[in-house]
Length: 489
Ligand SMILES: Cc1ncc(COP(=O)(O)O)c(C=O)c1O
Image (cartoon, rainbow, N blue to C red; front, side, top):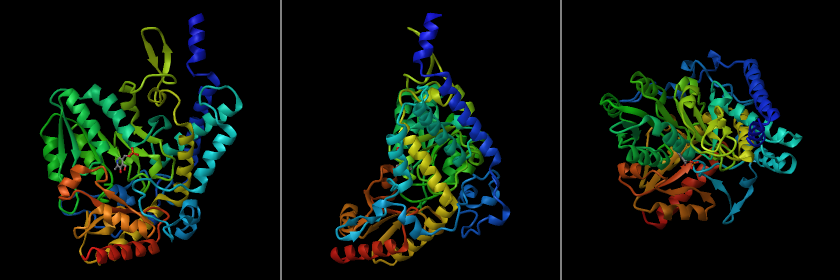
């Protein structure tokens, strides 16, 4: 009896805090039921410029044809028409002058800038209600718990998860994928089993599987790419049909090429073979409407810092049925029901996977970021980025000696433009652009196998987000031309 009371007191499950979490989830469910227009009205179906299929490719209906999306997310419409100049005022950092010029931030695929709302909420948390969550029975701990759980509910709503309990807070995409590899992978993957990946993956969706494959004696099988950066569907089919495949894992949007993969169709085919699918959504959730129930993926990972949120916080979505079967990833406080000297029992998801004190401020900041992008509207964001991408292809495409990698039709891709100019090294290019106040990324972008496929060691990458405008693209094109003159291209 004594022991039971001791366990109860120290196991971070104060009845009040737990009931708070339950209340937050219940209020989320109520709010969700109240939300008008969860299904997208037919009249708002975008008139897409895209063909329904690419040669050798499957339909990309999830991101392009909302008419086919039965369960559209609540947050795709935005509150008002898109006004980029208004949006720019929300980002204090854009006032910075770099080398005598206004900062043109074109590296949002690496991390996005933060709007004032998010910065202010982080400050408010530390000034007004900083406390550990789920533990205290006092006012500010309850406030922190409510905000933390509300953030989880907002994320569930953003991606249309069935329940907030399918949302696990992690450090970012990398940790989310490692969690699946270590927990689900070690349970389900054994000697001779296969894992399908693609040649356009970020290192964080390659290395965890290499580690697992080495440990379990499993094989990695890669889907190759066409020259214009699309997945070769026949490769996928051949691998899938070769037998023994236990998992498919692929990026939704390439962080180098901007290719938007037809994940929904790949999931359907994988499921026919009884094979679950993990989606790396680091470059999709911030930019396009993503609906996990429509995609029907088993796991989906993304990072808060790439969608206006703080660093050090990210999300693993997993279907409840998967989470129930998965063992914990980390052990420690908060994730247990009872601990005895030689054995312990676990809480249910999501808490089973959130050991120790989590990034509370980060989760609350991410909740604010979800509010922010939702108010802009994911469809508006996608439209704005598409216009900028088309404009950038047009402007950069006219520069002598340039090569832009990935899909040729900018209307079919996300806002990532990777290029090389003649034999100018990407680092030289990025350094020259920096002289003009333009921030871009150069290097292999954590995608060395993709660089090998492209036959280059590096590229320069400009990537756009909610706050970029055409004037910045003009400056980019002029600055690239200047580099060409300097290097006599
Ligand atoms: C496609 C993709 N996956 C995974 C990651 C890793 O994200 P993080 O470093 O936030 O874990 C990135 C980051 O650039 C990415 O672009």
